[in-house]
Image (cartoon, rainbow, N blue to C red):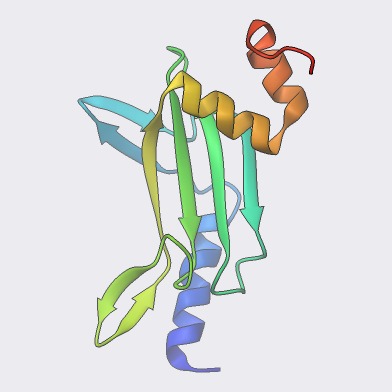
Length: 123
């Protein structure tokens, strides 16, 4: 295993280890995965796969939604580290109520029915 690969795996394991929390200030408001409520998540593969990704929907105490996403160097979360190499990364971004509803419906139908009961009708 290459030195780069070992370093990549250590970074991902550190980021995804339970207990590691992520904070970001957006528009002068703090979004913190430790204090927000985790609603649902979706992921592909596992963190030893360079294509790995995971996205988790959160809701703050004030009712705002945000998504924390992370992934490997062959995912949408890849970032250049120079010399044609890439690394995995993570980020937090805001989600509108509509986007949160779509995300929730795609990964956890029961949670979507619980959070948005009047917005979903039987087909």
